[in-house]
Length: 238
Image 1: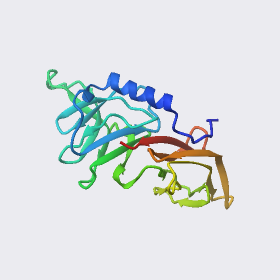
Image 2: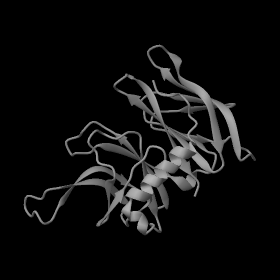
Image 3: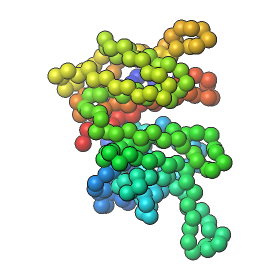
């Protein structure tokens, strides 16, 4: 059973994640400008290399993925399409590699700063390993708690005095900071059990929220244990 706490701001872990990105991401030698996107994942399929190769137009960027915080940013191409790819042999011309697409996301034209969430799926005939969800970071401010429901069930969140209902496929956010820079409040996560017709608790704890970051909680279905699970990601304010 995972640790139920949702306190995501572990400075040591975040620093280690950023250090790993600095060491392993060649694209950071020239910071991306203009429209950019970063990547986070809920889990990695077995055998997937990390850093991964991100294709943006004709460019290939090596990017280190993390669960704790977003990757280094990648410039969004004109068509808005970003792909995670793997180089494969070209039987017709060994000197010109081909690329297998493992994940693909399209960033809308009006989004200048995106985070792309990678969520593993069962291997498909076309080789895709992830489904993707694009979030517009400009839509969220420091202190926001964001809840993304990727299950087929209704999710309930009690955050302090707020009661938040998230339908399947929906994302909702709440900011309890007011004029404070930080707040520590109780949180309770539940899902509605359709057969029993009642709410079942997932976990309850206390969360610390800060004006310097946003917190994202992604609900998913754990097939191995046949239950609702969640992943928590910190999105710093830059």
